[in-house]
Image 1 (cartoon, rainbow, N blue to C red):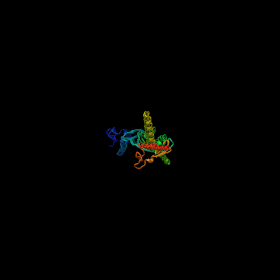
Image 2 (image 1 turned 60 degrees about the vertical axis):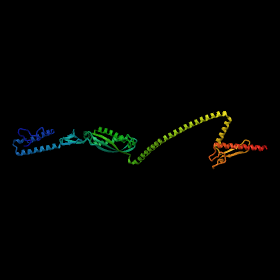
Image 3 (image 1 turned 120 degrees about the horizontal axis):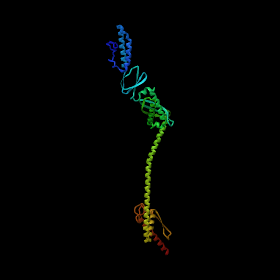
Image 4 (image 1 turned 180 degrees about the vertical axis):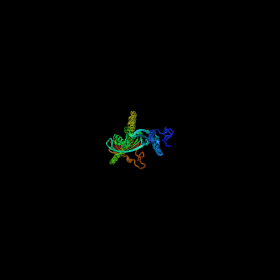
Length: 384
């Protein structure tokens, strides 16, 4: 018996074993199909032949098989990393969550979106900086899709919109920066500013894209001026090196100069103390000498004379002696009286190292005594 043939006073039997056992979404389609089949074979109870009943049974089986296949084709599995945007007759219906999902083919369309995959886009632009220099900047953007509905429906080409927004954000940030900042230590700061501005653009465009990270991969001047720029960089490096050398020299010379200044101050202080001490000693010596002079003026005067003669003759090699009342002047070559050889007949046994104070005193006494004798003999001959 065919599933749609009447029998036993019961209605058509459901191929799924009962009217309430089929998928809820197929009730309407099955009811319509059943009505059409009943209308098609309504006249066979009035004496139609076995051939009519046989053809009706085949058509029913074919219809059930087609519906079954159509229903099975609507079953699909949505992965854990995916979300599915469901459109019913071209209009948004819902977001399908991970798991087994059924949708009527031909009525609904399904667009899968991976919301955990980190995607990347590369950009390279030539632009002007704030100080009116041209730089080539290479940038990479890593992003994920956080709103599948906006990503699929709100923007015709989200990735192209991302490219335009990234270029605009990069030009804006680089245009507010100097060339030195872009090419050297300012890349990280520029990348953070570009990401913030790019995310604002994407939210305004309702692209459903969330920017994870922005990297400034490379920043360099145009190839036409690369050599000149290298010269500038080298000059800056030389400037920095010279500054470091100057600072190092200053760090070495300043403590040394301070040390020398401290030494000079200490030497000056020592000299001052020496002069003060010497002056104090001379004053005390003079006071003591004055006291002795008041006791014995003649002896003190002779002693001072001998000390003066001793200090003068100790620093000269020639002595001229003039005797009062005489016509001859005696010349004493002290450097000859002290030969470099060994013993000498002169008093005091003078050596090549010069006269001592005792030897000088003896020489002076001998010369004086000799002059007196000569003077006395001359006076005696003149009296005769």
